[in-house]
Length: 349
Image (cartoon, rainbow, N blue to C red):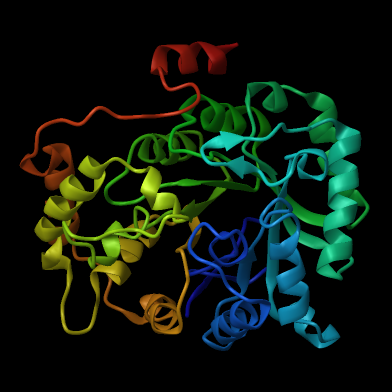
C-alpha cells in the first residue's frame, strides 16, 4: 500500500480506501456486524487506513461499525476516519428510499448536533475528515455553515472538512463552486474510466486554480462494471441498487470493457488498472471501491503495488473515451447544475 496526504496534514491516507456504504446499507447485500468487521480489520491489516462512513449509512451503523472494528484505544491512530453529515435521518429515516432522497438539514446547529452524535457513535474525540453530504448551492453560499466548520476545527472535533457530491453522477456547478469559493480540504465525487464527465472537468478546474482541494473518488469501477465480470446474462438481486440502472448500461458497458482488456496482464487486473488510472492524478487522495468480499478486498488493496499505466495505455484510453468506444452516443443523465455557461456565471459572481 502507498499513502498520500492532504496539504498541510500528516494523516497517512491509503491510496485505496474502504467505503462503508457497501457493508452498512443493504444496497449491495446484507452483512452481519461480524462479517463487516472482519472485512474492515482485514483491510487495515492489508494497509488500508482511510475508512469513509456517513451518519445516514444504516442510520449510524457505518460509524458504529468503525468503533466496533477498531475498539482498542491504541487502534485509533491506526486509521483515518472520514464521515459525512447533512441528512435528517433522525426524523426521516435512511437517506434514500429507492431513488428518492430524504430531507437534508444543513443549518449550523443541525450540523453541530450531527457531528457530536457522530463522535459518540465513533467512540472518538475527533473526526479526521468531516464532509457535508451531497450539498447544494445554498450550502456553498452559507457563510455561517462554513464558519461552523472552522469552529469545529478550532475545537479539535474535526481536523479537516470537505464536501461530497451526489447521490447520482453530476453536480458540476456545485463542485466547481465549492472548489472556487470554499477551498475544501476534500471533495468526494463519482469518477471512473467509463464515467468521466463531469469529474474530469472538476479535476481540470482544481488544477487551473492551483487548488489545494484533494479528491476522494467513489464508484471507481462504475458500479462493478470495470471489475470485468459482468455478462449480458448478469442479473442483480432485487435489493441491489444496480437494478435501477437501465439494461443499456449493462450491455454498452460490457462492450466498452472488452475494449479495455489490454490493461490486464498477469500482474494486474482490470479493476486494479482502473484504479491506477485514477491514481495517476496526484490530486486524488484516495480511491473508494465498493468492497464486499475477502478475495476482492485483497485484490483492491494490492493495487498500489501493480504497474503504473504507461503513456501508450493512457493515450489509448483517451482515444477510446473520446470516440465513445465506437458506440452510438448515449444520453447522459446527470443531476445538479451541469451547463458550463451557468457554472461560469456562478463562479464569476
